[in-house]
Image (cartoon, rainbow, N blue to C red):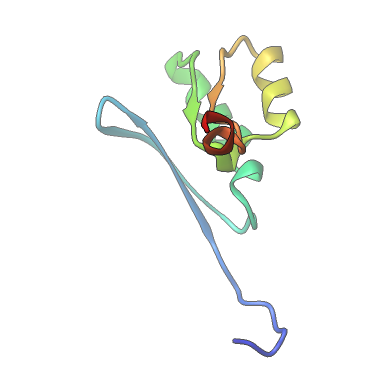
Amino acid sequence: MKNSQLKPAYNVTLGVDAKYIAGVMLSQEHSDTGTFIPMMEKLLTFGYTKPLADAGFESEENYTWCEENGQLAFINPTNHDQAKT
């Protein structure tokens, strides 16, 4: 739609454990960073303590939430590929 109009969009987030889907969330968040905390709140009841996520979920708010809720976050930094070279 190259006419400066916004497109309606949805963001689907899956929580996976050992190849099994542990949680599903559908939202209208425009980026992954806003879906991390709601998904993790759903998964807290299952006892997960070490979330692993790609760079799209990296934000200070998500790291702070993990620290306050006893989670050891493994979130790939946004500049990881650049830092490797």
